[in-house]
Length: 208
Image 1 (tube, rainbow, N blue to C red):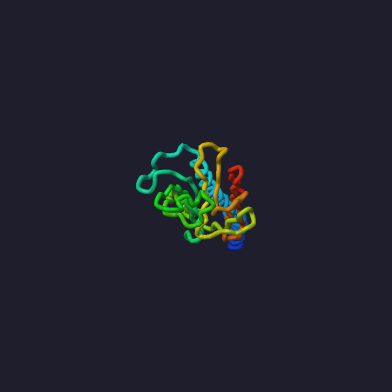
Image 2 (image 1 turned 90 degrees about the vertical axis):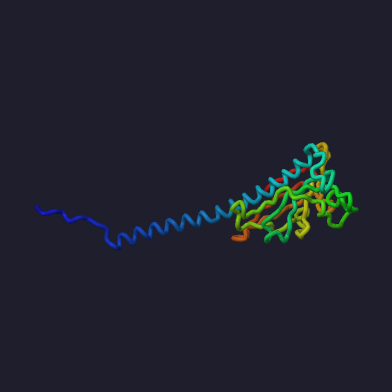
């Protein structure tokens, strides 16, 4: 009795299978990359929003009696510091603004009439880095006053003045009288954008 020859794949059949797998992999990657970029933007926006919300909430919490005796003895407010030169715009900081009794501009961030720098009494609480959160392509690309006027500099700090009650909420940005302040985030890989906007009237902080 003759044995039936063993069936096997030909080289052509193997090449066809490999080609199909490669095509499917390529299609999957094309769909995955935009999703990854979108996720990075969302993660960056959530990080910025959470820092701003924390500053707002801290400004309405019971004031510490003496947070750091070596620097100051009272609290002006809490803010978020965006710096144009912070590692190519990938970092920002939550900070405490304290009264500096040795400076005539001790209340600069919470007094629109004062224009000189007042960083001597700023105490950094937390520095947020996009790269520490696997956000590699997103930067803070701009800051817009009332949604239109670009104003991103090395001194872009938004401060929530300490207040006893929510109804007394006061927000400051370079002494300007604003309705909103928008932090613009951009993914350098595809130039897609997402905004985090602070409403100076209501205190709402939303992602757009």
